[in-house]
Image (tube, rainbow, N blue to C red; front, top):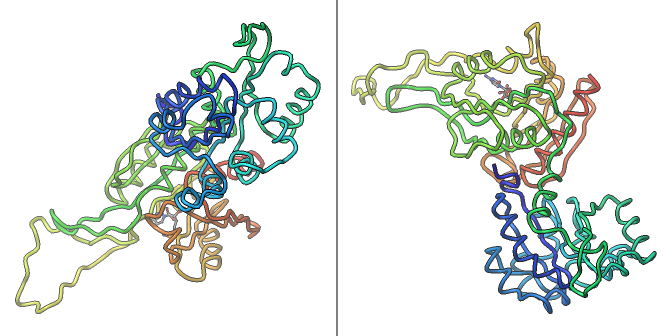
Length: 402
Ligand code: C5P
């Protein structure tokens, strides 16, 4: 199981002898499925070369704040936004002191100020330096600000001392990093998620479908599993790998999707992210339709309404907490609010698919959530996996209050 599958980790390497373990750490993080960008301080470069970490991470190493070429490729703000986790290993006494002061005089310290991602520190220093009241006060302050401390461990040190201050081993740090993504907000809950498009056959070789990629629904399934839920993901035809710990059921048409959802009930929470075809051809031709000269240049297809999966499940006696999506190109919040009421939902997630940077098939999203009291909460544009985690946390909170 790859516990860090597709997680984006910025690994900050400070200037301590434990930096030699950072090379191994990059490998362990990648073994767990993470994508790793390394940022080195000036001191870090004295202990291990950027070339080593570039070869192991598969990306150029980020070194300077004021390097125009590096900034043009992936600047410090982009790197800060890209990260799902910033892990600093080794975190020296000096680096911790600078972070505690909010100093931003190099790339790593600036990035720490600029990121919204969780930050974890793996302290590594001489045992007397670790015990020093100044370091202890810095560690406490950084912890109070929400940074996590991984270690340090006790044992023999490079300088010959014995005591607390050793950096944790690479595989322990990789496990600690994975634990950062393991929440409990949905522990014990069964979550049913629909994703992707549906395909409605016209004849044996043609069908009607839409541009949904399934990315948002799959990201939600991953986030729900990370929040501790048992997840059933019912997906139309997409080209995406199944997230870890998720039970996936593939379907083709809207009617298949409804049947699969009904078979997977009961559930505590339903998130309907699928772009279900509203209509299907009334008759599916047994053989490939031929161009018919008698009907001129046109072809008339008689269409009938598909069942509304979300509305059907949200009207059952054992209805789950129900969350729908409203992908609209105009009057976003107006249409979304109406759908919330018409489909008897607890929450609706509105997204503007007219904006190409957040619409179908894009990597990012920005959303507004509307509740039954028509109160709105917005999440700014970011990757679909980050939006998914924010959304799952929001939904879990409302589910527990319901
Ligand atoms: O009515 P509209 O298709 O815009 O509603 C969107 C929401 O309803 C989405 O959550 C979508 O997954 C769900 N839906 C459904 N079954 C349908 C149509 C939409 O579950 N037939």
